[in-house]
Length: 147
Ligand SMILES: [Fe+2]
Image 1 (cartoon, rainbow, N blue to C red):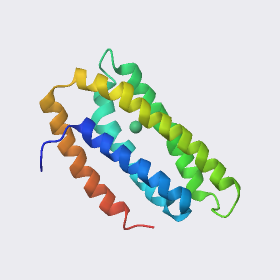
Image 2 (tube, protein in one colour; image 1 turned 180 degrees about the horizontal axis):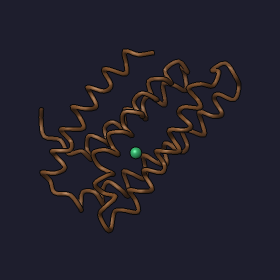
Image 3 (cartoon, protein in one colour; image 1 turned 120 degrees about the vertical axis):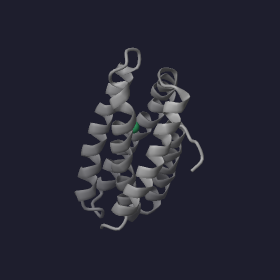
């Protein structure tokens, strides 16, 4: 597998999710795909990157904020997965989720990721990028088989 920084890999996955959001606006049944991607994304981002940054002065605040936003997003994702899709409130709830998600993705890309690049070495970033790609593919292939 080609060398890829975890920052680049995470940003690419963010873009995949932005595309999925557009699709869900036209077809609500695709929502479960976004939930599965985000569940895997949050878990790996926390395990591989945030846990490391949470201990580093200068980037700690951004990193902890990201983690708290994951917590909020996870609650909303779960709520929406259980909420009836034919109910008029479903789309309202989805739009609120998307507002928070878009803010979160943009903030990570604009604030957290550049700080992470300053605090970690190129070889560390590439090592983590490889790990992210491998685990993402592995975990997504497992969750995609379940309902
Ligand atoms: Fe995130």
